[in-house]
Length: 68
Image 1 (spheres, rainbow, N blue to C red):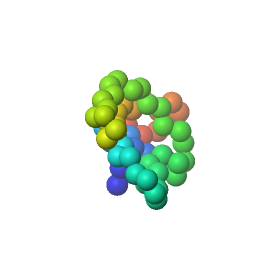
Image 2 (spheres, helix red, strand yellow; image 1 turned 135 degrees about the vertical axis):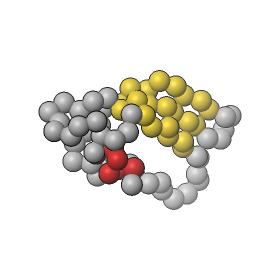
Image 3 (cartoon, one colour; image 1 turned 60 degrees about the vertical axis):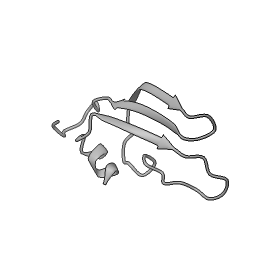
Image 4 (tube, helix red, strand yellow; image 1 turned 90 degrees about the horizontal axis):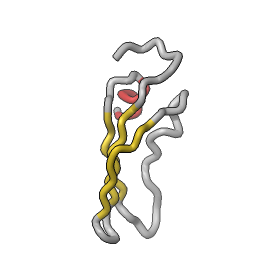
């Protein structure tokens, strides 16, 4: 659902949280989008060796026909 909202330019900001894992993989958010997504990172917070949280503003897409 997040991918569709990003692609339709319905979001202004994302808060991404990474949790460290030893084995396995995560979910890729942006590699399946048809166009690159421009982000402006505004904050980051880490809790020791635990989660990392990033706050990013989605910048308007150039040459886009979608309205916000």
